[in-house]
Length: 178
Image (cartoon, rainbow, N blue to C red):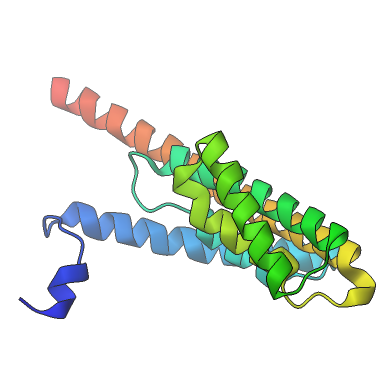
């Protein structure tokens, strides 16, 4: 048994996994270009954080994709909100980031956002890290908006994939009934 076999997903090698991978690759590409187009149009900073947030929220697969993306969206908003509040109240250094992460973990636990915990923590760090003393509130809000925008783009993409797969499945059911 190789080290790689210990970490590889256990799944059948079939066409469905390749289709899922292709759809996810397409979604991430569309998300990056959509975020770029939005940020180019509104000339806003923090485009990279919106791209990262979109990719963190996207979920490969058709079955649980939309629900998982919605969970991650809410969790990211919690993480970004906590990050802004802690940065404004206490600061944005390593110790404060650690405190914010603890708050986010317990907030996500209380809200039962288990599937979004890692991306919530990432959005907390995005909002708090590298912010200058002079602009903690403005930069934090700017980054929190970027997190929300990126998450929104991801949710719209997941919703589109969900609708298309439901439509495709209904078409297969009708063809199979004939």
